[in-house]
Image 1 (cartoon, rainbow, N blue to C red):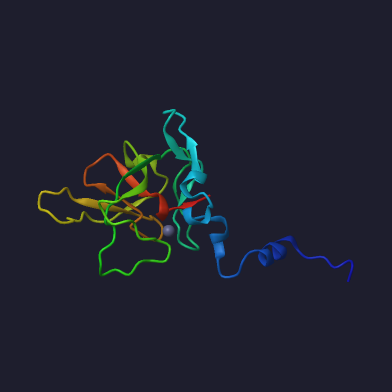
Image 2: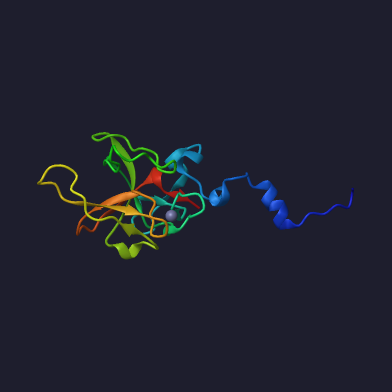
Length: 168
Ligand SMILES: [Zn+2]
């Protein structure tokens, strides 16, 4: 038995936890001991601003579509937004955000959607008051998982929830 060999790919498969698929390489914010602190790096163009040092991915097990390349989004803590309607049951890859007016952590992407590698949008939704601007939710362009974030209809700021994207 001393000479027994195992093909590298078989070994890799054995070492990979079962039934997690591609997820072994997609990390969630909750997978980092230090949370959002672990993914920060200073922004190239705006020193003093913080960005993500990983590519941002669709968090869905088996999807992992690249949403945004590392170093593009700017970290902002600001008012949370209700991304989910009460009727929808939450997808396990989409942790609930704090209820407004509590704050949440966001990756802010500007000035337009060309910054993204892949992103999808929902139809505009009127959240509540008539006066309120219509929101569009950001979803995975490959598998439609979402909402991952939001933007105002016709707006030039795109907000991705730090807890709702994968990191690689
Ligand atoms: Zn996806």
